Image (cartoon, rainbow, N blue to C red; front, side, top):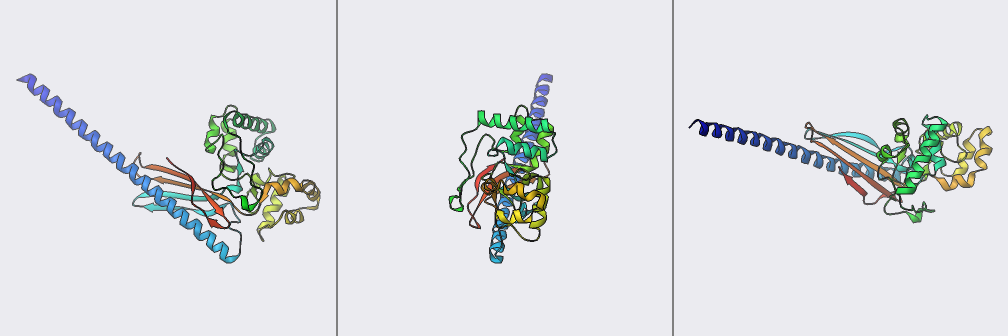
Amino acid sequence: MLWALVVAAALAADLHAGARADVRGATAARDAARARWAARGGLAHAQEALRARLNASSAAGLPPATDTLVVRPETLDYDGVRVRVSVVDARARVQLNLAPAEELRALAAAAGLSGDAADAFARSVAEWRGRNGPRMPPAPSGTGAVAARPPTGAFREVEELRGVPGVTLEAYRAVRPWLSVAGDGRINLNSAPVPVLRTLPGFGDQVARAVVERRRMSPFLSPYEVVAALPAARRLAVQDRLGELMARVAFTPLHAEVRVEARGAGAAARARIRAVAVLAGGRLAPLARIEER
């Protein structure tokens, strides 16, 4: 009789523990689903905000973006799930899969790394791309050659740099804010920040800051306007490389990085979506390369 009571008590305890585990599992699944749907709502919000920005710019006769953020970051609340949304001009960053080693080295130096550390970073990335990436197509030479989807390469996201041999944590943290895996590799003179501008042919810190100062008054429309805006001491150096510069720069965005992060109360209530918006002729094409995590 005693053994029967012991067995019954053990079975009851197991059933109770199983029921609690089932409840916890159901709660975690519900929290994860809420975060996922909130993130999708944030993505739809980002699309509408981007479309409104493009329509407003078109109505005013202005370029779609004259700053790094095509759409300002927003924090939304969907039934207790906080959603962070941002849309960034990919041409305001250096394209990690397309930038030559010289450009990567210049970016690392502009981000504060020493000469040796910048060399090591650029060499490590170039070697990694050579071993792990497909052959990348050249950047489109005209506005009529807009790709429907941005190119892919050795890196699907900038965070993968952390796994590249020779790329230190210091280097990764220094260059991370200025890199992208979207875009055609051109730099938007009307939106790129100083560290990114410093990677352009003939540019240095003085030229990059002069460009940023000038575009506050009105956006650039041609490389010749850039030359005219430079200090006399730096003008000749940029003129000598004007052909290279014209091949490397742009004046409007083509691809925009869309990032959505949803965070709820539970540990499982986390979701992230990344996508690329293609801006063709000032219009928003369907989103490309949507990744949910």
